[in-house]
Length: 327
Image (cartoon, rainbow, N blue to C red; front, side, top):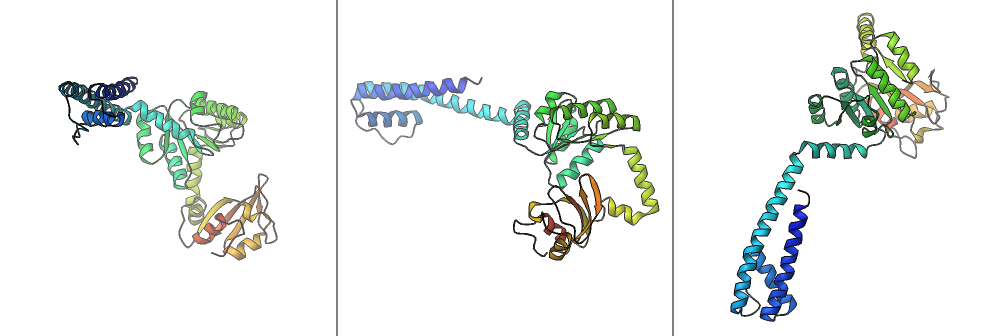
C-alpha cells in the first residue's frame, strides 16, 4: 500500500515527459510550449493551444487526456484514503503519541491509572508538569488523553515499556499499581535503567514498603494509613490539616515548596522576604529540614517552604537573573 502512491506519481511524471516529447514530434512546437500543452491537457484547464493542432496531435491529445485524467483522479483518491487512514488508524495514533513522548525530558511517569493514578496525574498536570501515564488497559487511558496527559499502553513492569516512556530522561516516577509485587518490580526496573530518577511507590503494608525502600524507592506511601492519618488530623486540627494538605490556596494566602532558583543563590532569607514579602518557613538542605533564620544564606540545591500571598510566592518562583523584585 505504501508503494502505490509512489508508483502512480512515477507514472504521471512519465506521462508528462511522454506528452511533451509527443507534442514536440507531432507538432514541432518549442519544448516549453509542448510542456505547457501537456500540463493543460492533463489538468483540463483549457487555456488554448500554442498553435494549430493537426489530426495526429488531436488524437494524441484525446489519448493523453483520458489516460492522464484517470491516473490523476485515482492518485487523488488514493492520497485522500491514505490521509484518512493515517488520522483514524489506532496504530498510527499510537505511533504519534510515542513520538511526542520521545521528545520529553524531566517528565514524570505514572504507572497505573486507577483512582490513585488519576488523582496523581491530574495534580501534576495542574502544576504544569509533563506526565506520561502507563497502563496495560487501553480503556483506562482514553480519559487520560482527554485531560492532556501523554499515554502509553503497556505493562509497566516491562523494562522495554519503561524505556518507551522515557525513563532514561525522566525526573521522577510514581508507581501506584494495585499490586505490591508489580510496584516492587517497577521500582527495581526504574532504578536499574535510571539510578538518578526519583521514585515514589505505593505499598499496602509495611513489609512491602520495606522491600521497596531496599529496592531503591525514595518514598513509599501506604494510601490506607495516609487516609487514616488525614482523617484523624482533620478531627484533631482541621485548619492545620487543610493548610498542610494544600487545600487552602487563594490569592490572599498559599504555601508552596520551591527549589531555590539560581537568581536567589547567595541571597539571605531576609533579602528574599524584604524584596518579595514572602515568608520562608523552612529550608530543606542536604536531606534535612531547617528552621529558617533571617541571616541564613540560600545555597544551590536548597528547597524552601514559602508562604504568603499568591503574587508574593510567584515572585520568588519567577526570580529573574538580576534578583527578585517586589511583588
